[in-house]
Image (cartoon, rainbow, N blue to C red; front, side, top):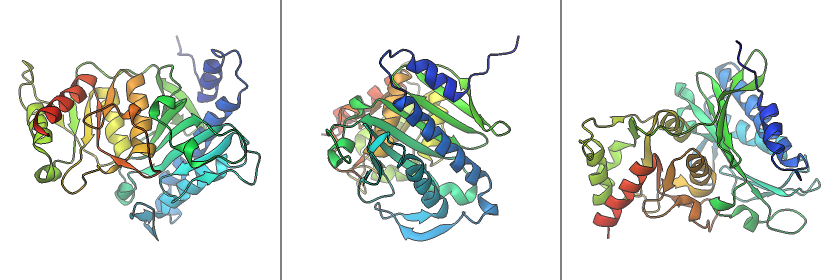
Length: 334
């Protein structure tokens, strides 16, 4: 018997029915993000043909040189969401400041996003992605504020990511499990392909830039060596897999089991990854899938962001592995 075909629009609407007072605004916002992802996916698959590969000649707030596709993805998400009346404010990894909605009637939601994670891999055809989180605004009226964007992960109403690779997938959660949708290019639709994703109980992989080991703390080094040995009676060490695109590494470990980590080190004592745009949304997804995310000492979802572009260490994946990392750090890194 043929499987039932479920589009992302249908899935969003069906989840909306769980909330009798829903107005449809939030559902439409999720679909706006999905539509922006389709546009970005179209450009990534033909990037070399339309001259969007390569460097844009500008630098973002992080001090990183922007790629042409970075700029395109950022502008696409902003344009798709600025006039709908659903958002009060946006914040992007690529923009210095918040993006308040001033030219249109502001709505009641907040969108934070990394428009193109892993963009340093664009020119070598490695998987890249988009990460996003959605909050309810805190301010009462008018354009959204900085405080609307600086909310803990516990306050998220939705989070997700899109991975642009051999196929394009959108994975998201609204707190009712994690669901994955694969884009069918012939239909131009995201179709449900991975319902109710759960992190496998038996992990397979560890993902870390091991070239940074000389700069790691004693706790992180000992944890890594523990992963490579017979862990607590398990005779098979984890296999190392590191792509260098956070979305791609996280996506593989979400489906296959494992841990990704980018710890603080002597070069980056505050960590490298962005708390607001990368760590918090993926932490929300991980928890909904039965996993866990930590900065090495505390749950990522409990951290109060203080600045838009705040960085953090990140350990994310199978709960038992992340908790073991916390144990090593607590024991050896005073």
